[in-house]
Image (cartoon, rainbow, N blue to C red):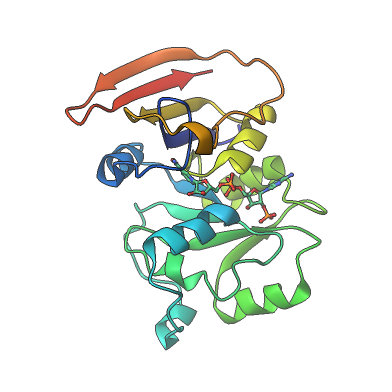
Length: 217
Ligand SMILES: NC(=O)c1ccc[n+]([C@@H]2O[C@H](COP(=O)([O-])OP(=O)(O)OC[C@H]3O[C@@H](n4cnc5c(N)ncnc54)[C@H](OP(=O)(O)O)[C@@H]3O)[C@@H](O)[C@H]2O)c1
């Protein structure tokens, strides 16, 4: 059986993924409560996260070349990066204390030098697909090789919508924030190519005005 896949996002009332500051503590509290085996993240999301919350990319230290020894109950961070855009940046993820370690998803088109870069730093990686990553194949391998059976996807529209269009998503968790982004809206679902019905299975209101809605296929 394929791993269970949950999309978890914070959105505005008009469905935007960006253009406002989510309640990060609540966003990650909910994400953590899923106790998933892995978080699946797109390369754009990692780059945007570093720009928003980082203070530049720190120089690598010798310890960044080793896999961290952390609690195996922590989730892996599985990052889709067939183009090798995160070369020189992955240690910002590996250093994160709530990440077990990084697994990189690559394709047959990934630049050869990126493989060497990852091997030198002892990153786990999976090669699936010719051009872009074949996400079905990759999630199968995550289950086979790493025992990953529940994946939480905290990513942007591109990767999230590809997963929904591919019929891979079991659950959508939306933390709806009480504001409208308007003109700069980055709508969460605007690349979806057909109607897909979900059932509301949970709705919870928080003191900060956010509502958490959970939908299952
Ligand atoms: N509000 C929230 O909850 C939330 C959460 C996360 C992110 N965000 C925001 O979302 C934005 C980033 O999201 P995004 O929509 O630009 O990108 P994204 O969701 O990070 O998706 C980009 C990823 O999609 C992969 N991809 C593209 N085409 C593919 C295909 N055909 N097959 C397989 N994989 C494919 C790319 O892989 P390659 O690298 O291999 O090309 C890349 O890793 C940022 O502004 C971030 O702040 C918001």
